[in-house]
Length: 125
Image (cartoon, rainbow, N blue to C red; front, side, top):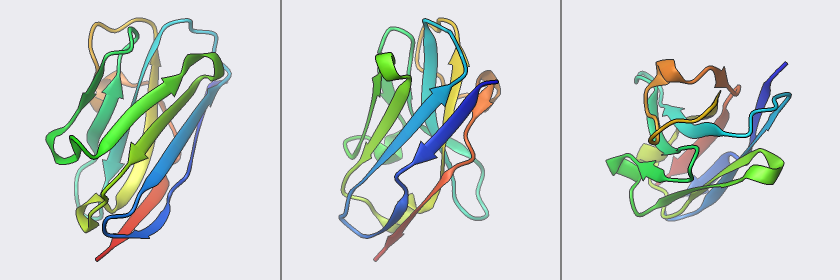
């Protein structure tokens, strides 16, 4: 059974940093695509950063220049370094994954088959 487990959320003040981690276990895919979504209270879930099976990365405009996605393929681990956080970044953050190759970073929720339980990020002003 594939499991996705996030960690690293917490509470910080504006301008602070957090590093989220995500470990995927129970699968044997050699190529895969992963990403981070978030959902703020009363809002729809949105993709913020994604990485494709060739290592290409992409970010949504609200986080460009502040967030960095990276991975350690040997450990099936995904990271999200979040710097210069603002209150608008407050949300539950979800790690997502899909097995197999993908030609580009994916921000469509329906294309990810595996989701973590989420980790809360709270940014106060």
